Length: 339
Ligand code: 2P0
Image 1: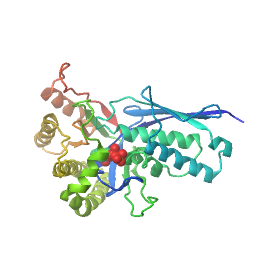
Image 2: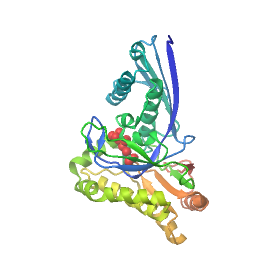
Image 3: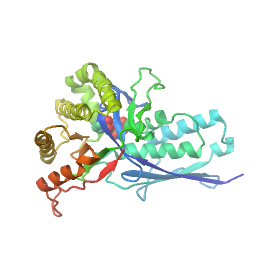
Image 4: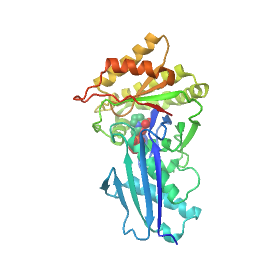
């Protein structure tokens, strides 16, 4: 019998156009509302994870970006346990191998914890690699969800919806592909890195405070998001950029309004972020139509959705207004990324 098995997987980040913010179950990571994102292509902003098990490993170990971390992480353990539970059920791995310890090695090729979906790519990659190692069949997005909510969307390519579900055990809270990356293959994402600094309040803690204190979040979940999910999916099917862009920008703005409505407030966008938002509205006005949309996650960096034909114009405008500086906290790496 083999004593060492090893698998390597690459998983990209995803950029939400309808934002996830708020949980109804902290342990299973069940969201208050559904969300939709675009998954970037696998050759750009990615996590790369190698996992192995062996009868010779004396304990479970994990290294993140070259540094060994403790394995005492509830989310990590939940993911490993769920993969092993399913592996046992599906029966492709011997009972002896199921007992072996694992070694996990993961690297990101972009700043971690700066609001650039590092946990999404990281946990999607972890769960995808473990699932391969243990030869799992079936949807694994509901396992990735238990590592980090947004990670479930990075399991699939193209535009992906995380269905909130309404069961208490989370079995119906998983990701489904809306369209694959070929459907709207002119779509690009520009990432404008405003700051690589770690954010002040992490998403998990931030959304807990929002759930506890924001009235606007309640209205958003019950009155706003359901219609937006339906409308943006229709816009994606129809390749209707204007509707897609309007909803994307409005949803980003409402998410940050919820953050400000949280008490004490969560301030993720910086002055530069707001200046980028102003510039995008100005570009659209001068173009006489909507050609680019911004969206901001739990950090100051901007993600711009636009079609390939408009990349040169938008990049030129961004570089003109925000010339790259080496000695400031503010600089931009505008990389057109394909979905
Ligand atoms: C999103 N964000 O939909 C939203 C937009 C941030 C703003 O998903 O607690 O890191 O691990 O489930 O997934 C960030 O939340 O939080 C996030 P946990 P996660 O992309």
